[in-house]
Image 1: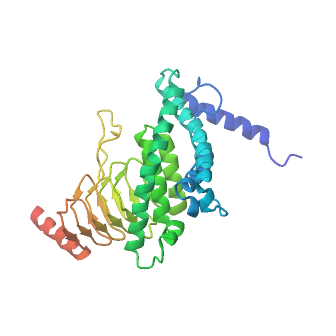
Image 2 (image 1 turned 30 degrees about the horizontal axis):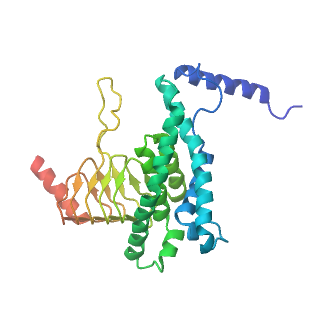
Image 3 (image 1 turned 45 degrees about the horizontal axis):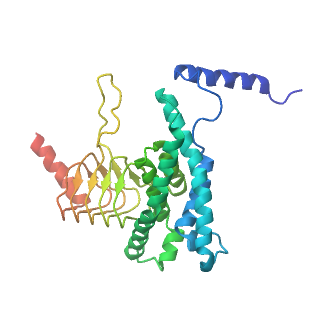
Length: 307
């Protein structure tokens, strides 16, 4: 007696896959895995974190006298592994676009070289993020604690690396890198967002930062903050228009407290303070302060003016 009807389930799954492929006009794609591996990228990210911060995120038995040796070995292995994933994304993109694969290897190598060359600058930006967290949180006892324990810092490590991949026209790799941090921290930062130095996410759970958000330097946000879109324009066929600026611009030295929702292509001026649990859909001037009670009064005043 068979416990499970494996044969029938396999046949039904086969049909389900082919229904999807026919609907997406992908029935004639070549066999084999054609897109990057999430598991492979997770391993690459672990190696790169150890390259960026070898004495804190590298091997537990590492000593400073062998630090450069470890960085060289780990970096070489990580970049070669990344090169394979970059090739896969470029080939995947070429297949979708119906273009030639002839220059994929050269493009992939150039992209990974550019990514590697950016790592020292990324380390500098991350140092500024770590210091912002240390100086901005009275509970932080050391920069080591911040680097090892704070989910906002982990999210920023992934974001800084993902953003470079995004700049190199590797959006799928970038999204996978960002989503690995999202799953681990509950912080959702789209790799297309632009974030300046000294960014601090305190606590972090539930923070959402959209693709076209622009954030200046020394900005601090708390848990459950959303920098999102207010509306999604469509084209003549009713399809969403992608890539349009639709998320907020946050200037330098802004503080956004827990639960605030900031929507649309609005600007929070330099030094503005946004209180907790408010809903902001209009520009805030430099140095402006928005609090929950003020938001209710503003909404009431707007409703009076509308009548």
